[in-house]
Image (cartoon, rainbow, N blue to C red; front, side, top):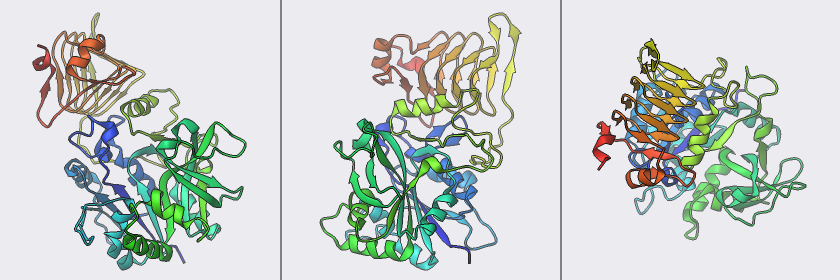
Length: 417
C-alpha cells in the first residue's frame, strides 16, 4: 500500500530580516533567480517528489503570494488528492488570533488533517533556497519507524542562535533539541559546527494530532514546533534527524552536493542569487528530471541588440530572463528578471535586478538589488558612493544597495535632490 502524504507549507512569516524587499510582499513571494519566487523551491521539491496534496498556509502581506500561486500553482486535476491550495489564517483559536506560532498554524487547520486522514504529514517552510528529494526523507522516516523526523544540516556554531540545534546519536536518534541558543552543543568530534534543523518535518499523523491538541491547551507554550513540540518529544517518542547531506536528486551528477541556503538577510539573499552565475553552479536549475517550476509566463525570449563600439548589447557570467532586452547595454556577473530594459552605454555589474526595471543610457549600477519597476535614469550611478547611497536607499554593512520598488514605476531621478 502506498503511503498517503499530506503536505503543509508554512508561508506566513513576516520576513522582517529581508526588509525592505519584504516591505510590500510576503517573503516566500520574493523574486529569486530572475524568473522564480522563493516559494517555488519548496513547491517544486514536493511535486517532484510525488507529493501532490499541499496546503500553503499564508498570513502576512499575502496578496503577492496569492497572485503568484494563482498564476501557475493552483492545481485542479481529476483526482481529489491532487491540489495546491492557499489557506489564509482561519482564526480558529479561542481568541480568534492570527497564527501564534508554527504549531498553532497547524492546529488552526487541524480539520484539514483529520479530513484527509493521511499516514504522514510533511511540514515544510517556504523561506529557504534548496533542492530536496523529499521522498528519501519519508522513506528514512518509515525505515526508522520514526514518529517525528527533522531534516538537519551542519552549520557553523556561530549561527547556533539562528537555528534549532539537534543532538543526535550515531543512528540519527534525536536525544536533545535546543531552539536558537548560542551555547547549543556542537557536533561530536566537530567543535566548529552544530547540527541545525532545517525547519522541515515529517510526522506520523496520530502523534502529530495528539501533540497539536495537547500544545493548544498548554497556556505556557509559545505554540511553536522548534520551541515547544520538538523539545518536549525527546525521550517520549521515536524521533530522528534526517541528514540532508545524504539526499540525492534524480538526474544530478553523483558528486553533486546538496544545496540549501537560509536567505533570511539581504546579504544571504544576494549571495544565493550570485551562486547562479557560476559555470557549474552549486544550485543546478538545469536538471530536466528535477525542474524548478513557477508561474506560466508568456514572455518572449530575451534579446541582445546593437553591435557598435560603446553600444553593444551583451551579458557575461549572467542570468537573463524572458522578455528582457539589452539594447546596447552591458550586464556582467548579474541576475536579471523579466521584461527589463538596459539601454545604450549602461553597465550593470554584480547585481540582482527584479522584473520590469529600466536602466537608462550610460547609467552604472554595481552590487545592488533593484526591486520591481525601478527606473534608473540616464547617467545615474548606484553602488559607487555609499555615503550618497545611504541618503537615498537601504545599504547593508557589506555595501549592497537596495533600491525599493512599488506597484507603480519608481523613478530613481525623483530621489536625486
